[in-house]
Each structure stands twice: as C-alpha cells, then as structure tokens.
View 1: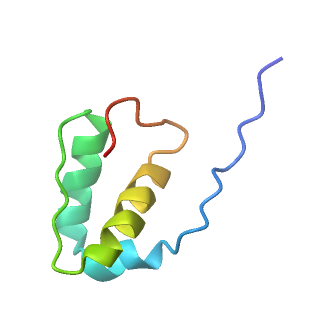
View 2: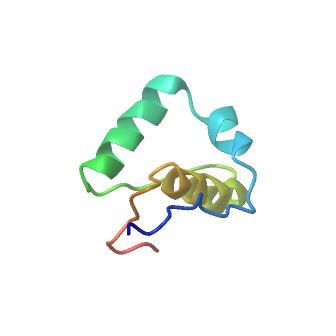
Length: 70
C-alpha cells in the first residue's frame, strides 16, 4: 500500500507571495526551486521575507527542499 499524501500545513498567508511578486518572477523562482538552484530573496520589507520563503517551499509540495535554508 502507498502512503497517503496529505497537503502540507501552512499557517502563513500565501497571498503575500502573490502580492509582492509578479508572475514572471514567481515562475522564475519556482523553476529555480525545482532545479535546486541557489536563491537569494531580498526585500525592503524584511517582515515579508519569511512569509514569501515559506510560501515558496509550500508550493513545492509534494516535494520538499533538501538543502540549506537560512
């Protein structure tokens, strides 16, 4: 029997991700995540960095980030 995949729990609002990034940038970053490339997030609104980073990792489901996450 295959283990049942459950949706990841995300207590952070995902709308911040779509509020601060346009679709072209979002697709570029998502592609980089899928290809396991290095990504650096910068913002003048530092309080949003955690929300955006966690939302990006949530979008990887059913995969998970296996590298350094600081």
